[in-house]
Length: 196
Image (cartoon, rainbow, N blue to C red; front, side, top):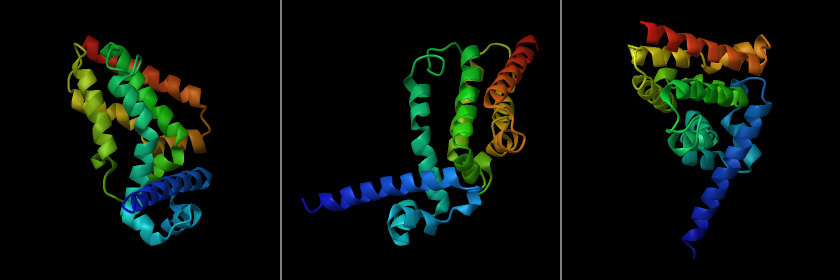
């Protein structure tokens, strides 16, 4: 029994930290406003516990992002249409992009903080590589389009966190309008590729 208690405490602390960070990012004016000290205090743990569990601020951001992204990942890997693998590729591409956009709209501060975390290029991040690889693989299944590697990058650029924040936050573009605009852009890309 004594071995179990530290593991249970670590799991409980991890959940408390993720919940505290989630709340702080949701209420912050900007992603840079949330410090590791703020998260530790809100979670009721020491800063040492925070750093041991997540390494650094970028590690905490990645863990929180991945936890929130898990339901979408499950839907993409094994779920029903429109995200799941049984969806025809031409319908799945806009559904995947819409899912990324909706996720970033729902998690604006967190997405922005992760992409601006100073851990190098956002294009080298694990989550970006995963979305790019998936999108490219689906594009490869559609007859006609070429240079799917580049096309996947261009389409994902339309859902970068800084652009989503600019449009939804600064310009006040309604979410449904952004989704419709992205669907239109995707349709044009797919149509141009099919006619090329």
